Length: 86
Image (cartoon, rainbow, N blue to C red; front, side, top):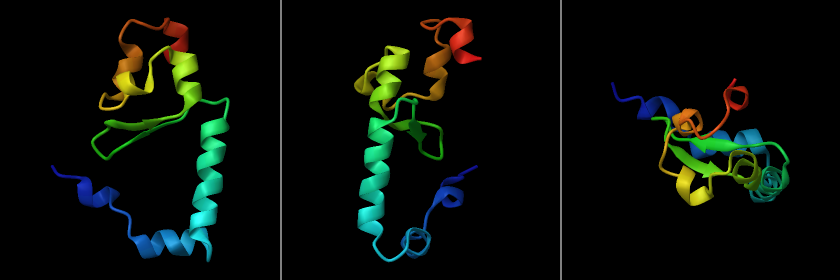
């Protein structure tokens, strides 16, 4: 089942959600995610990691390069303790 259409975002919908100055809002959100002490990862509709922030790298020990292209199952690979993934 191809669910890619379920995840498609219409650019005009994004513009409505972000208001008139979408570029400024996106820049602020990007900075907040990059500077957050909380781990952030973004996947595509198939569950493949497309983005991780620096906190992800610090907290998991996986580099951005190691994580991108994998699925979040990477975190249950035996590299982390059980308490980390639960």
